[in-house]
Image 1 (cartoon, rainbow, N blue to C red):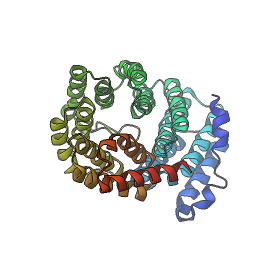
Image 2: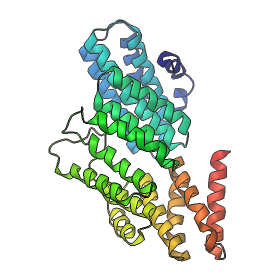
Image 3: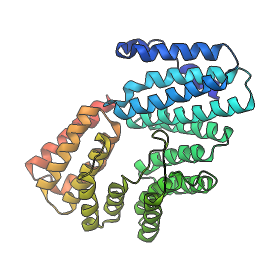
Image 4: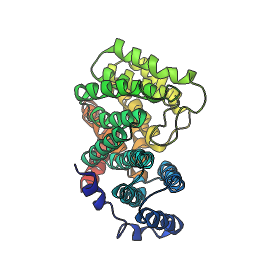
Length: 340
């Protein structure tokens, strides 16, 4: 895919007009765009671009509906592409490629949350290409990991495994102080669990837990956010996939006691509902799944909707219970509304 052709689609007209509440931010976009259009970008301008990228990641983290951030991300990508179209020094070109890789990952995250996996995969591919151009192994490997995560969510674990292995090999060339390798291991653990390989899953979880021994800033709050706080929920998800429900419940209960984003909390709740299914406990299923449903309606997150859709086929043995019948109907309505 020609990067320039895609970036031409990422214009600020129309969509940006729907965001009157962020006028100061739009002014920054306009100002940065004017800088990029002048031609050569200096180090001060590149630093401003980087600062705005970081701001967009913070806005994304705080936004209850992630899609609201997309127009600003598109506008900033247009700014960066304008800079790349002009002749630049090698150092500035490399920096612009890094920033593009960063922001394509954010665009992919937004599409992923919206259940638009094809668009997300496209962004992650462009992020990987830009990371390669920038000779930034951590950025490059994180983009590949996000791409593999789509296959994990679609339960196509055999497709995710080789991509994650490639990402892990790349990460060994990266900064050992960052948590890139540990994050990749956490995703690999879920992949191995999906493949039914308990030993490989446990080894990967042990590698992921090494993040707790890293010193200093281990992530940047943007394209790399793994700090070990997700270990309990990731361990729980792995054990659910492996059918080790007692171990899973202990890990997920620990995770639920922590501070979680809405999307992560809903994932934990859905996994706990799945444990209720296997225990033939309609009350447990309804309690946890209803809470996840409420979050899905509040946030519009496609990730949560897909997680609930994955739970739905497992409800069949409990459909004689009225509250499970209601739950099944509400999941069907939620998924149907998103498809419409």
